[in-house]
Image (cartoon, rainbow, N blue to C red; front, side, top):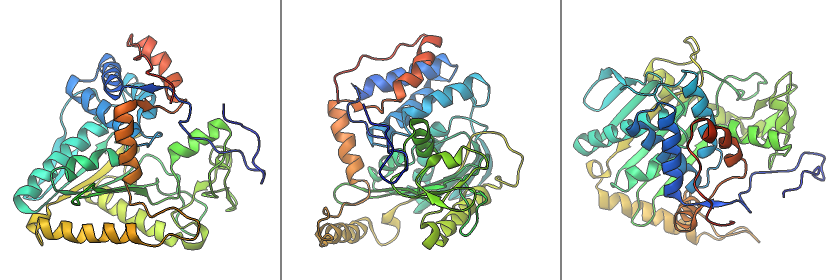
Length: 372
């Protein structure tokens, strides 16, 4: 059991490891998550896609954005705040750009449909973009990327949530933005480069988990209501509330602030729906773009450039005493393969959070394989 004793500097201890967690077969988890969603009224094909994206999040190691989201999704479904079936409405369509109204449908299903549409446009015209207003939450952005890079296409996925705000602009103590994640999948001759970062130092999911555990962040990535940086996530939950810091923090937070503004423009701005509109609840405004290198300098030339960069980064001399350079997505893909072969090590908070839903919906969880 992880210690909850105070850290030496007086901050709460850190939490978040899956060490010692029970492992479950990935396919069994997908089937079970799908069964829970179907029992909650979700159409079969939508349930299958949502379950796949959530389990992929855990396989990649994004344990706050995998099955940890499922209890919240089930609550939204049973309370009528997430649609169980239907299709997005096309607001506007052009040759290489579409805008959809997601009609509060499950975000993973919508985003997969948007990615497929964007890739089809890109393979014909070189690029394709779909923006979605009024989607529900879309889960882990990294979970979408390899679906594009396996087809030789570069994918960009950005997201904001107009229903909430927890990140302050640089130089402020008032929250305006969500963490506004951005992800990119970049094909190479070997494994793709998979970026999944946000315009803030950390996320709402991670700070909520650490707050519940009485644990601390690795670094002072949040600020209290007076603008003092701290590792203690409780400042986000106690009144007066603090905020997440933009990427770069107090010293260089103008960079995260700039990214947040860009993502708001690409999501809410292009979709024509966002923070200026009435609140509808937990959700997302989404930007999905596909780029086919064959339509630009050529697929082989693209990979030659990316391969050179990957090799140069790997060959770069590490800082004294530090590990070798690792490209974005390398550790996630290694985890994906290891856990696909040996079982998914779920964060220890996930199964307890789903127990009541399993009983309520009469869909019992799969047996654990062994201890991680």
